[in-house]
Image 1: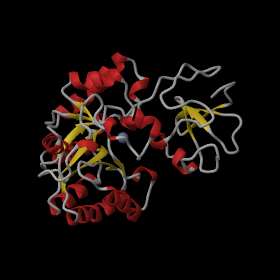
Image 2: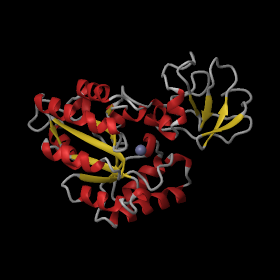
Image 3: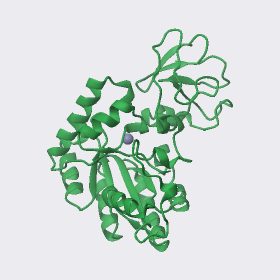
Image 4: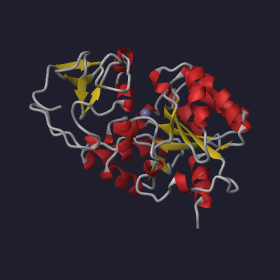
Length: 311
Ligand SMILES: [Zn+2]
C-alpha cells in the first residue's frame, strides 16, 4: 500500500479502496487486501463471490504482497494508519502456529504427549450462531456422542433464536462468546471493545450462559481484547484447523479438510450458518471416532491438554 491509494468503493457494505498496479481488482481494507483469484500478486485465491459475500471474505484475507507485511503498520495517503493485525487475521487458515492458539497462555500443542491418556481429543468449535442449523447440529452431536463449543454472536440472540441458544446451552455442549456485533475487535477503541464484549455476555446471560471462552471474529484481536476477555472471565481461543466452510465449500471438501488434519488437541473452526457444514459433520465425527478421537467441549479439551503437557 505504498504510494497513493486508489478509488474508494463500497462492496456489500465494506468500505474498500481499489489499489493501483494489480491485474485484477484488488481492494485494500484495514491494512490488508481482499483479492480475487485472478490477481497474481496474491497466493491465496478468493473468489469475487466470496468478496461479495461480505466480511466473511476477510477471514482469510492476507496482507497485500505488494504492500504491508503481517502485523506491520501501514499508511495510505488518505486513510488512517492501520493497526497491526493479529496472526489469524493476517494469515487466515492453516498452517497455523499452535503457539497462537491461546494468546498469552503457555499451551503449546507441539509439546503435548500424544500418547498420554486422554490426549486424543478434538474440540469442534461452531461459530456465528445461534442459527436455525444449530438444532440439526445438536442432533448430530448427540447421535454421535460428541460435544462441541458454539461461539454465539450476542446480538443474534433475539426472537426465534432465543430458544435455539437456550437449547444449545442446555444440551451439554458449551457456549462461548463471539462478540456482540462480530467486528474486527482491533478496530474498536478500548471502551468500544469493553462495551461489545459486555453486551455479548449480557445476551448470553439471558439464556443462562456465563462464557469461559471468547473467539474473536476473524481471529482478530489485540492486547486490549485479550485483557478485557480475561477480566470478563474468558480465555481467548483461536483454532488449529480451518474447515473453510465459510468459503461455501462443498460438504465432501469440508469433511476431507478436517479429517485429514485431525490430531491430538486439534481445535476445528466451523460455522453454524452453512448447510454444507451440517452435511459434513457426520463424516467428520465418524472418521474421528475411527481414528480414536473424542470430540469434547473446549473446557474438557483444556483439561485434557493440561494433563498431556510435559511436567
Ligand atoms: Zn464469526
